[in-house]
Image 1 (cartoon, protein in one colour):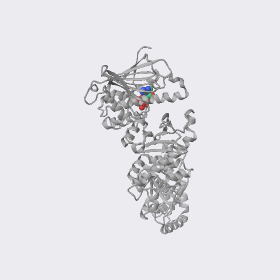
Image 2: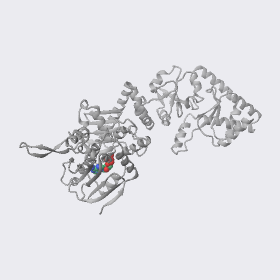
Image 3: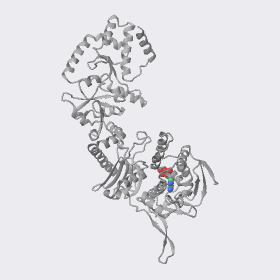
Image 4: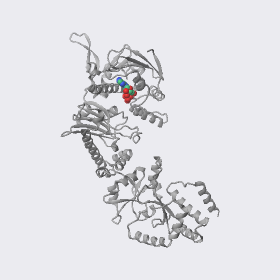
Length: 633
Ligand code: ADP
């Protein structure tokens, strides 16, 4: 096939443009990116060779070469890994698939084109980083097991060419035609073996395959010869002693290994011996992935057996609610020669997973106890995940018990988050239940008419601000033997003597107004399941409550947002008998339940209750007209 000229995908063009035109503070990162790609390519081949020895063509010494040349002004990084077919080159190099790169573009968009140098320096942009230092890049590659090789060439300006070529050995060579400023300069000289050796040691020391370089040496007769030396120590970081590993080494490792761009919030490095042997190196990334809660988020831990890479995303280690954890597990107990699917479900994987889950939760609770501020930082990013964990395990008491003390809530009386334990410890003896109120923010909840009486009685209320909160609290159903009680449910009542007394009085009153309540309900024509008098309102005239069980109004909204309009809350209109509007309502009723005045009054009362809950009435124009009429009277 002759030379073919193709265009980069639009997103790739954008990225290349940024890479080429921005001032990278950290010019050297291209090397770790390319070496990392080379190492990944060898991993892939190695894994493949476990079940298909022939693919190695007798060549099983894996290596990566870093070859600078002052004459040709190039730097070549080559590997004998899996290589790429023509189609794969077009697919992998011409388009952006990797989520880290997408996230990077997102961030840039967020900053409205202003590129934060630090940001760009921290981000790995993978292969494209080659264009930080090169004005032309060639990839010469041959897929293992195939004979055809291809050469890809680009100057990073929108187009690339691709043509057939010869290549004896399998794998990939990336040839960087270095920009003038990176040749022989004082700051950067990427043709200098000395500089390159140091960079390999700094960024890629733990790469599992030898990274080799040529060094000019004088033999004992003073003659110049070339010696090939392996530059990296090849010891995987996780196999080293915890106490010997510096924080920066961990941070570098996670950035490199998991395409992170900030140092992690927390690192867990555990070694277990005994019946199941494994080492796990896990982290909580500083920020939750943009797509963490979406279907396209790929959770899972990297899996190694005796330091040999097995798979990228093993999903069965951790439960779904810990999907934000990144990291790897290395265990000699895992069989290498079974399929990935079976491996994921193996008993060993489950056993290790259970131990990891327990350990992570233990560490989190330690942080919560010892470093509240740090825990809150974690909570702000991942609290939702733990609440989803409670909800998804509504029928698993053990999981709920493990998670319940890790939950934080805003409350009506505290500036800061509280745990359930802290809330309960502040409850006065007369308070039997944990009161909850849900709404979109603190402000909205504090204005709810039901909150007035709680404020007056000095009762603290747990704020459920995230839609998942209500679901999680319902799944818990109790904490420390105390029921959760929503202030918006029909069974909401206070336990003190005064409240009991007013409740009885209101019940008496309701009896004597049975007809009125029945007629209001009739006018509302099926919109509410019940109309009743309440003792919970102070200055408010009305509010909406929902049935003691079933979806709440907020749950209904959540379901609707998920395109599930069939879960409806049962609505109950509650009227304050001490309000002037109730007196007016009774008066109008006495003049006739079929009069327009009475009917309109009922409609408007109901509309008020809806508006308080942030719900639009079905017929806003009609309602507005009725209000106008009333105002003009
Ligand atoms: P990432 O490595 O983060 O996925 P890159 O832009 O660095 O993103 O690379 C894109 C893809 O190109 C890789 O996922 C891989 O499939 C392929 N690739 C890159 N370098 C090599 C290589 N040396 N050998 C084989 N495939 C490679």
